[in-house]
Length: 396
Ligand code: SF4
Image (tube, rainbow, N blue to C red):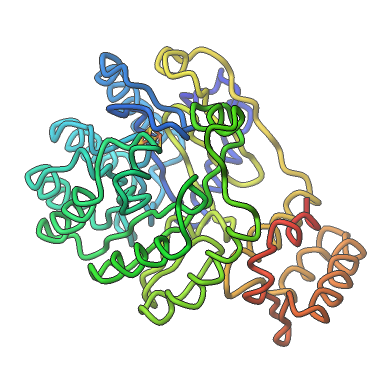
């Protein structure tokens, strides 16, 4: 969505600009192309590469327009996600990077991440990305078992995933992350832990471990519903996360968030901003933005987004929503939430009884060993992390 005065964000232009000037923002670009569709995927992505040049042209226009509308604000984290950003040509990546440098103030930039599929990366492309200033790479490994990868419809095998990590290192990416998936039909606890060990052994600095999510319709969900494949039970999944909680710190990768493990100091700064509720602008189909009290999501229909059809719904957060997101997101982090700060905000918004009610519940959960209070800070314990969904429902 181009932020012109006549558009849906027009009447909020001053608010958006002020929010973007208050502190550095994060910038996310969505590249919605993949060579093939994984069997579990619910992201906005297409195999229709004929749309790629129009998408890049549209993204370039959006970058320039948003930079202008927000007064060329400072950006401290960049994230190129998808889809498969490693399908961009070197020329496309160079053009997008040049536009970002021209439209935004990148002097405070602390991290520039790109996602890549191990089945699509070559040394030349990685070196070119590195030379353009991209300094962190996140590779969708998912598993180191060719049978499980085939079940997921991934376009790469286990050896190719390990090769991609090595290639990224050769290209100069000192900051490397991998995604692993838990809960794949047929995946054993021992194999997940072995994969995590193998990945840690490559020297990467960050590991994201996600539970397979079959909420939306997809071929893998159909297989499960037809009884041809069985998902692991909740207890089996909890056992895997418990084993990883014990093993990964020993491998130098302690957890810093429910699904994320990193060497100390190597936490994802871009993703941390979502849990800390710091401002971000998302460009591209399905990309989400939050600036000031406003939030919106771009159209997930790629052609509609390219042609600027359809109006994203602009959500204005009220005081209760803004307050409840602080523990809802902050308790995902190991360092938890500064409760005194939350109280100050609640007092300013005249909502202290709400925070009192939350605190009473969290004190009761502390008795049960699921929550830990340390002075004015509160966080989930390891056991609390394993049942976090139930705890975080308190704030929904
Ligand atoms: S690579 Fe990622 S975005 Fe592309 S189809 Fe697979 S899961 Fe979806």
